[in-house]
Image (cartoon, rainbow, N blue to C red):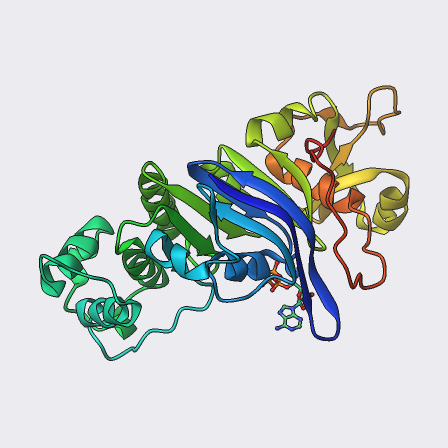
Length: 312
Ligand SMILES: Nc1ncnc2c1ncn2[C@@H]1O[C@H](COP(=O)(O)OP(=O)(O)OP(=O)(O)O)[C@@H](O)[C@H]1O
C-alpha cells in the first residue's frame, strides 16, 4: 500500500502546488484525475523521488520514502510526461541505454532482459527499428518497458495517453491493465476516459487538494436520475448556463446539445429528457463545485480526513 499523509509542496514564488494531500493507494490500478495545473505532476515527481515535499509523509508498505528516498529506487518504475528518446537509436538499443542509466541488474544478460521486456510490451517486431519511426503509442510502450525493468512494486505513469490515437490508446490501456495485476499502478491523467476504462478507484485532484476518492460506478450512481439532455439555440446559451447546472454542451447540427444536472425537485426545462449520467458529468460537476484556493498558503492545510464521493 502506498500512503500519503498531509503532503504539501510549495515552490518558490511561492506557488502552493499541493495543499495537504491524504491518499491510500492499494495494489492494482489507481487513477489521479485532475485538470492542468492541479498538482498531479508535482505529486508524481515527489513519489518518484525527483522532488522533495515541503512537508508530509509518503510510505510504501511501511517504508518511509521521504526520509529514505534511496529505499524506493528498487521498487519504483516511472514513466514521466516528457520522455526523452534518441531518435536514431533502435528500440532495443534505446531500451538497453535506459536500463544501463537506471543501473538495472540483469543476471541473465542485458540483451536477454531487453528482449524479454520488449516482448512484454509487444514491441519485439520493432526491436531493430529506429525510435524515430515509432508511433506515439509504440514510444509509450517502450517507456513502459524501461519502467517495468526490475519488476517494481510501484509503477507511476504521468499522462501516458495524451497524443495517442484511439486505437493506440486502447492498446496502451490493455498493456497497463495487464501490468497492474501484479503491482500498484498510479495513473495520472486529465482524460476522464482513461479513468473510466482502467481504474476501479480514483482520486480527483484540483488546486493541490483531493476533492474526492471514488470509483467510476459510485461516481455515476451518485448522479442517478439527475441528468437531463436537450437542445438550446446558440443565442440562448449564455442565459441558459446562468440558470442551470450545465455539465456538457456540444454543438450538433448548429444547435447546442446540452446536458444538465437537476437535483430532485428542481424544475427541468421543457424538452429536456432524463439521460444516464456519465463519468464525465460527475467529473465536470465536481470541478464546478471545487472551491477556489485561498491566497498562497505558506504552510500545510490538511485535507479532510475522508473526501466526499463525487456528486455527493
Ligand atoms: N518548478 C515549478 N516552479 C513553480 N511553480 C511550479 C513548478 N512546477 C509546477 N508549478 C506550479 O504548480 C502547480 C501544479 O503544477 P503541476 O505541473 O504539478 O500540475 P499538473 O496537474 O501536473 O498539470 P499539467 O497536467 O499541466 O502538468 C501549477 O500552478 C504550476 O504552475
